[in-house]
Amino acid sequence: MRAYLLSRLTDPELAHGLDSFVAQDCTTTAGLVAHIAEFDHRRLYLPAGYPSMFAYCVQKLHMSEDATYKRITAARAAREFPAIFECLAEGRLHLTGVGLLAPHLTAGNAADLLTAAAHRTKAEIEELIARRFPRTEEMGLIQALPGSTDTQLAPPMKTGCQR
Image (cartoon, rainbow, N blue to C red; front, side, top):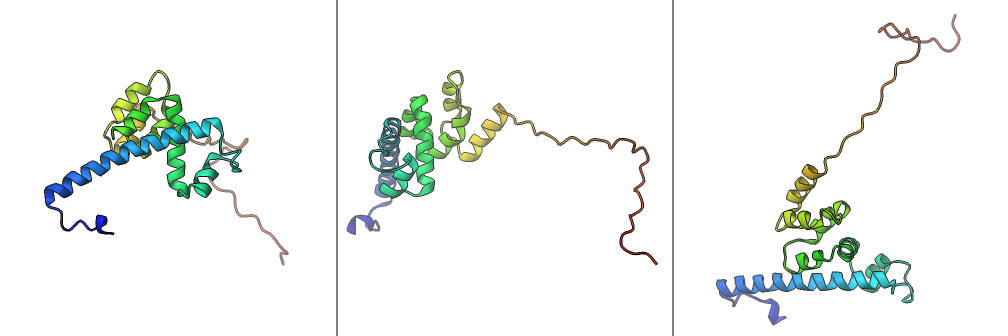
């Protein structure tokens, strides 16, 4: 309990401690993602009695669904593009950023995209992706009905019994 009461620390000690914990967290996250990547690749969740890596992480490791999704997404992308592990470990890229980049990474663009996304916020990475991979919105087609040439609406049809 005493380790979490930090009011005794000086401002420089607190700032140094915060920097140190963030660096440790990045390294730990990269290590965890690497373990998930290999565990998933070997499908070790199956002999452990789980139908998927997701189920294993949520049920066995007690991770939240959101944390699980982000880490599995990063793990699968990092198996294909191992530079992601270093980006995570060094704090150049966060899990959300990896998740945003993953669908767009190819052998030809991975190094460039990972460099461009370094130290960027989620919004900045979304903007980067939007610039590099513009989406074309498909508009529905409007078809003219055969034989309709006048622009006036037809009178409403009468229904029911008329007297």
